[in-house]
Length: 80
Image (cartoon, rainbow, N blue to C red):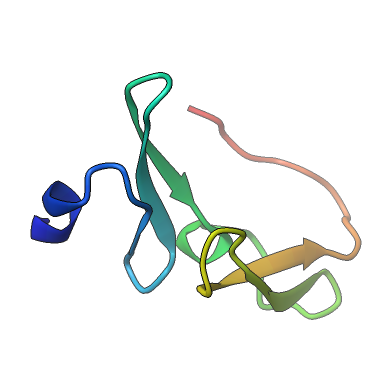
């Protein structure tokens, strides 16, 4: 938490690079981004449907896990 408070406008990666925190200076808003590894995705370990890879973050050297949907049988879920 000290890291968040000492650099309020810088991007800070949390939870083993599974989410990112920053402050949008123009909007004066706190922002959080959840990356794929911090989401609950059905069948995510099934290689017929999903492929994991890495992507370098735009403004840093941090590598982020990304997942690609290869094919889909059906879709269901809740958005709250």
